Image 1 (cartoon, helix red, strand yellow):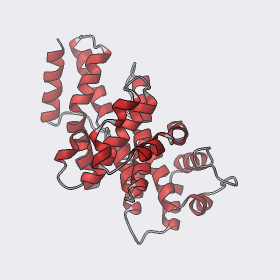
Image 2 (cartoon, helix red, strand yellow):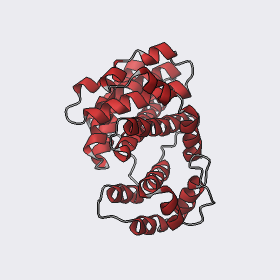
Image 3 (tube, rainbow, N blue to C red):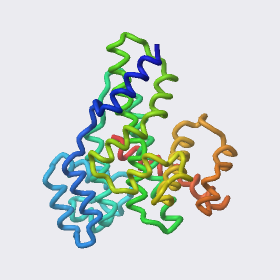
Amino acid sequence: MTEQIEQALVERIDKHRIELPVLPQVAGRVMALANDPSADAARLSALIHQDQALAAHVLRIANSPAYMPRTPIASLQHAVAMLGMSQLSEIAVTVSLKSVAVKIAGHEEDIRQLWRHALASGAYAKEIARMRRYNVESAYLCGLLHAVGKPVVLKTVSAIASEMHIPLDPGTVASFLDGYHPRVGSLIAIEWALPPQVAETITYYRIYEQAPSHKQEVMMTCLADRLATYILVPDSFDDSTLREHTVFADLNLYPNDIDSLLNLKEKVLNLVDAMAQ
């Protein structure tokens, strides 16, 4: 029975008959601004201001415990001054991407968990990049979007199973998500014109040895993904299994570096809670 679902899924992917989410216009423009060396804080503030709901959401997050402002942040201009342009653009992109989250009846909790994992991966990727003295903004985007195909696979598989009147168990769903999200994520990367390092991360983060051009970002995302799973799903694997992964050595990270990353658990969870609301 599950073979029929898989066959239908592969056919839809191969024939591009899969419904992809649309990149919110503001997210695309904020990403472009973040990569524009000539962009200034006033342009970013003006862009966010065009969407009042987004502006309100960004201000709420900027005032959350995750960012711990010394005084309440009252305006976007104030937020730029307190947090800096890169952090503000990071919040704006994340909030606007959440607005296109795939909605699937009966799978609300699954979607919530996928989004929390994306946020934790983004937060950890940023910390790893900081430790490795690498581009923090780029690392965050790679971590946030590395599994962007999973909700779309979930929606497609649910629809196929419903059409075929075949019941789905959680284990089967998980294997479909793991097996097919890189292919669907690659389609989204093309559709959204994502930066090349993000597109490469989606395809190679689990097989980073094969990454052709952006191996550092791909390795950092591989580690961020594992750390996110470790703190969000406590029984996924134990401490020694986490530490034994080759990615630590490949990133030239030592046991004390691993300790430092694990000690950031509360900081990462605060960020996830702030962004996930």
